[in-house]
Length: 231
Ligand SMILES: [Mg+2]
View 1 (cartoon, protein in one colour):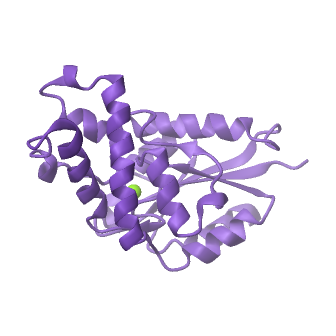
View 2 (spheres, rainbow, N blue to C red; view 1 turned 60 degrees about the vertical axis):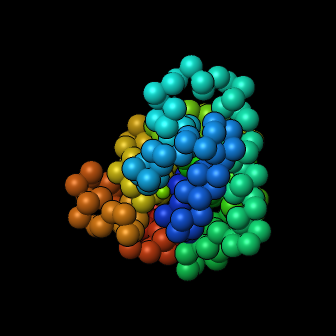
């Protein structure tokens, strides 16, 4: 059996975007679980490339004893409830071409698709499920599992290696994301780093972190995959 190529994807800013919905859900969940003042620090927090656990740890850093494992779990449950309520009104907006590209890739046995996202798993599944993409990404590393995105990449790779049909390993690993943290995570696991420019990070911003490629549109990934195979 020939080796497959592993394609890992970030979600927010890479496959699609919600403008303020994630932040709004976070705000509501913080107030519900930690009290009315808990979200005061939220406006200063950058969500781009961050993991949900890192954001939560940052916002509770003045009273870390309050963040017990049980309360952390409760918070993520409530966060998912708030996200779900928002998504019913306003589903996650996929970028042009993502639907077709992921359908095309997921049908080819040459590729295995997974996620490396700062989203907690329940929110990631809801987000992609609302967009009809959930079954195309059958495993991943998620933002409730570690605060460090590099570790999430390692978790995703470990799951990919254990996935049926992966016994021979992968001929190539690719990680596509929209922030310098995605590039760093790609390098951590020896993946080719594809950076997609966004309103957060321009081509120049991303280039400074030395990804293998910078693209402006996710659809360019198909051409890169083809070119890489031919070379
Ligand atoms: Mg992102």
